[in-house]
Amino acid sequence: MRFKLKASLAALATTAIVTTGAHAASHSEALSGDFVIFSDMSNPAPRAVIEGLAAQFGEMHPDLNIEVTIIDRDAYKTQIRNFLTANAPDVANWYAANRMLPYVKAGLFEDVSDLWEEPQFADQLASTKGALTIDDKQWGVPYTYYQWGVYYRKDLYEQYGLTEPTTWEEEKANCQVLLDNGIKCYTLGSKNFWTTGGWFDYLNLRTNGYDFHAQLTAGEIPWTDDRVKATFANWRELLDMGAFIDNHTAYSWQESLPFMVQGQAAAILMGNFAVAPLRDGGLDDSKLDFYQFVEITPGIELAEDAPTDTFHIPSQAKNKDAARAFLKFVTSPEVQTAINAGDALGQLPVNSAAGVDDDKFLIEGFEMLSENSPGGVAQFFDRDADAQIAQIGMEGFQEFMVKPDNLDKILDRIEKVRQRVNK
Image (cartoon, rainbow, N blue to C red; front, side):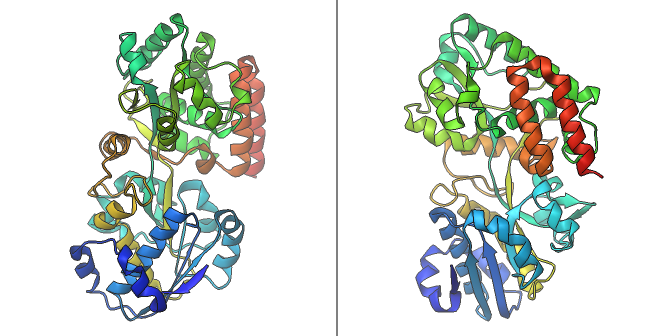
C-alpha cells in the first residue's frame, strides 16, 4: 500500500500521537523534499501506528512530501535486500542483532552512531545499544520490544506455600513441590522449535552471561566448549526431575497453554504475547503472575530476551537529514509511550523515560528491562544466531529435551554448521 500524506493528512490527523513539547522541538529542524518510508507493519494495529507516525511527522514538517509504502510482512522479508539495493527508501523498519547483520555487512544500512552520542539515545535507550551495535558502531534505533520471563499460576503457588524464586536452587525446590503434588513445573510446545530456543537462551545467559552468549550466537565460540555443556547440564537437571509436560513435541506453543489453564502445569517460559490467550482461557490477574528468570551462576549480571523492532536508514537514502530527524522523533519518550500503548502496539517502549500502558504485565516487564537487566538485552536465539545455526540448533534443543544422552552428537552437529558458516 502506498499513499501520499499530503493528500491524506487531514484524515490521519486524528491519530496524532505526540505531545506539544515533542512537536515544538522538531520544528527547529527545517526539512523539505521527498521522504519515503517502507514498512512491514501490515496488520491493522501496527499499520495504524506507522500511518499515525508519518502523519504526525508530516504535520511537524509541512515542507516534507511524505510517502509510506506498507508491504505484507512475509513479502517484506523477501524484498528487503532488493529495495535496499535499488530505489532505497529513506527509512525502513527491521529487526536488531543478527537480523540486521547481513545488511550492515553488505553496506546497505547507514551508520547512525552519531545519534547514539546524544543523551536521548546514550541514556534513555541504553538497554538496546548492544543489539544495534556491530563493529562498535550503531546501525539503527529501536521503537518497541517485549519481555520474556516466567508466567506462572499464582494461585497454585499460594496453594502449596511457594514464593517467587530468585535462585536456581529455589527454582528447583519449587518445582519439586509441584511435582510431588502431581503438577508439572512447566508447559511447553516444542513442536515450535523456537520455544526451546527460549529455554536455551535463558539457561545460557544465566550460566555464562551475556557476553559469552553473544559470542556463541555470533559463531565465535565452538558449540563443543565446556561452558556450553555446563548450560545443558543445568537444563538436564530439570529434565531428570520430569519438570516439563509429557509429549511436548506434539504441541504448538498455543496448544501447550491449556495445561497451564487447567492446572496440570504451573508455569511457562514465554514472551508477553502469551498473556492474552492465557487471560482468554480464564486466568485473570489473581491467578496469573510473572517473575524474572532466576540467577544460576552467582555474580553473573541478569540479561534478558527482549526481541526489538527497529528503524534504519538505508545507505542509499536520498533524504538522510529527514531520516535522522525521524529516528529522533520515533525514539522520543512521548512517541514511544503513545505507539506502545494498549490500543496501539500493546508492547513496551524502549526509552526508559517513556510511560507504559496500565497493564500489570507490561508494567512489570518495563521495570525489569529498564531497571533490572544490567547484563544486557538479547534478541532471541533465532534472531541472534545465523539462520543455519539457529535452525540446526533449535532442532537439537528439542532432541536434547527428549533424548538428553544425545548431547555430544547434537553439539557436534551444530559445531559442524558453525564451522561451515564461518568459512
